[in-house]
Length: 537
Image (cartoon, rainbow, N blue to C red; front, side, top):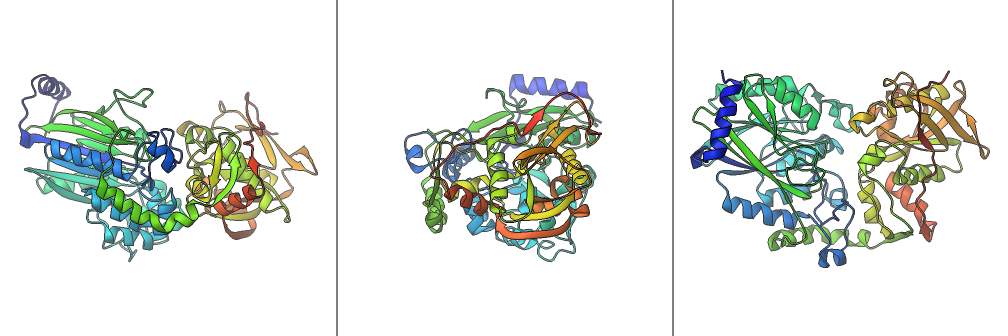
């Protein structure tokens, strides 16, 4: 068994002397949470126009990523390219092409393996299965039983063994354990704890003589650290899902690159993650001794800055995929008078202007019905918008999931329970935070989750706010995903009555709302207030 003292000493020697042989060295290039960002983006993740890109204002895009990958492959020793999931969803490329655009881009980049993210299941097993069948690399999922799902059982695998030069490297993939809560995942797949799944696959790989093991994990930074602490035999975890920027040189990063964690066998596990949207390419170089002991791990994120020259072949492939999108891209909906904030940091923790737009548009669409309040989860918002013209493409970037508007009836007490769920995981930046309309509420983050964080709720009735009546029935506007219990809104699925899927996607709801305005002024009106501890009696 390796001792911590031995491993630390070996790390120090390796870093000081650099004596590791080339065949003991592995370079891991990695991405995560790309979300169909084939085109360049602004530094803040917002949509970038062609003119802005030509002016040198834009980052990312598949063509810049290809340039960096090709450059690193040419310079590195034993290079592999991995992705930690959520290639699906985010832009019109996915809306029109589904998983086939991602498969073409990833095949051209010559990925060696990927783990599935939760959004790979957004359009069900059939779309995912078609993607995996097209992919010329292993698509990995260890923490699920999909043996009864005909679209997936022959195209997914829990782990794989990659040959990188003279090195054999075992790679395991895991998705979030709660992916099964998504109705679109279907009834034939059962997800379970990634820790036990990884333990089983580590044993399996080691029984085949593989002693260098990487986990590609779409579990988030916090759980990745727990996995590293609990599971022996993992050398590297390539992470995703939490959109974490790990770096030693980027300002305000979320942690060091790599984050080194003490493993239960006395060794060390290196954890890396590369933010989101292709803004960075991760590059980790690790060295091993002949027994597979991790000697050193170093590297950082490489920004896909405007000065990265685009790869011409990839640029041409993106243009080919973009051609059918042009009629949608060029249709202007309205003009924004100010910045619309759709960032996860804001919309998953407090009132945000993009959340207000979505919730207000929802109620406006239902003007001629008895819908009183709207509750939409902040996690469904995926971009901000800058002042200026807004196109259908911009709105689809904000609301990429083709989620449909839904309504149901709940009592006031059940609405309070829904809001309690909405604020129950703010500390984790979870997507369930409620963005609302037709109501207002105050909440106390000091209270324990689901035990009285919601202090007061008022409902707008006949032009004035009145305290919510726990016994009264209200019609609530939401979306199909939440209506089915997604994001922890089990009260919707279990208690809702007179449930209706209105059949129109949220992006069209918002487009229709904005088309009635020559100019839209973003709204923040204090409908969600955080304050001192208290409960509703």
